[in-house]
Structure formats: C-alpha cells, structure tokens
Image 1 (tube, rainbow, N blue to C red):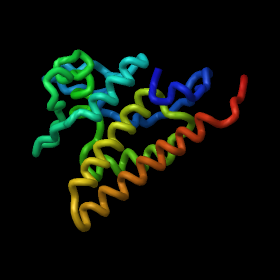
Image 2: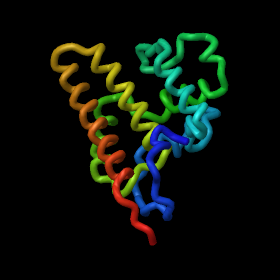
Image 3: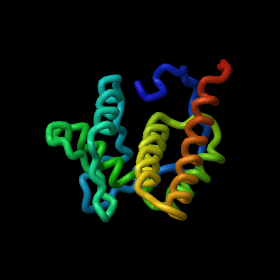
Image 4: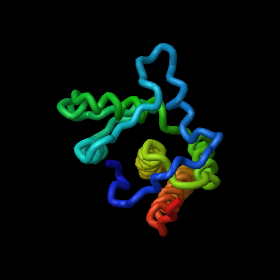
Amino acid sequence: TSWKAAIPRHSSSPIPFTSVLFPAAHRPKRSSSMPLNPILQSSLEEVELLYEFLLAELDISPDLQISIKDEELASLRKASDFRIICNDVIPKRIPDIRRLSASLSSHPGILKKEDFERTALTLAYTAYRTALSQGHQKDIWAQSFRSLFQALRHDLMRSSGPRVTP
C-alpha cells in the first residue's frame, strides 16, 4: 500500500520511459551499503510510520543530511531506509529539484509508487526549506514547492481518471 493506496492503479505493464526520475536510487555510492532502488513503504504500517517520521522533529545539518531527532523512532529499521532515501536519493538543491520538476512535467503515464514517494518526500523537504528561507531565496524555494505540488496533483488526477481495459 502506498500513499495513493485508495486510488486504483492501472495493472497493465508500465509505459516505457527512458529517463529515470531519481537516478541516485539506481546508482548507489560505492562506499555505501545503500540498497539499489530503496523503497520506504510497502504496507499500510510503513505508510503510517512514514507520517510519524515526517511529524517527528527532523534535523537537517549544514551539509543537508537529514536525521530523525527522536531516538526511539530513529532506531527503527525503516528509519534507516528513510535516512537513505532522504540523504542519498531525493534532490536537495534547487537546480536538481528544478530538473526533477521538468522531468515530472513531461513524464508519461502514472508515477511508480517509489517515484511518487520520493517526489512527496522532496516536496516535504522543499516546504521545510521554503519556511526557513527569506527574501528572494524564499521565492525560489516556493516556486520549486509549487512545481512539485502541481506534478503530484497532476499524477493523482491522472491515476483517478477513467480506467482503460486492454
């Protein structure tokens, strides 16, 4: 089950797409024990746990590393996956987020569960950075937030549209 669990999905094979939205998920660092293409949520319990992570106080270091402050939550096995996705997979710099937004705007079909999850986490990160920014930087982060939000909204609208059976 994913965040979009209540929305029926197409069961046909995915539309071929040559570009990968989150290339870091498919190219783990050699020095890392990061699994190839990590996915945070595969059950309703994991979706609920993701919300707990996001509602808990997060710490973002000057080098943009994200960690969960609550020691009990941080000790959970899924917290490790959360850290990997937040620190090694999602984009955290404006040029990379803009690239993702551009890719999302031209993405055919419906996002895969892991791409939706990563885009939503990028959206949460962008909201956090928008709240912390001031002046021109705040405007730049806010525009990135709007672009990601529109992409997720568009995906949800597409996925809840009429079903075509083969």
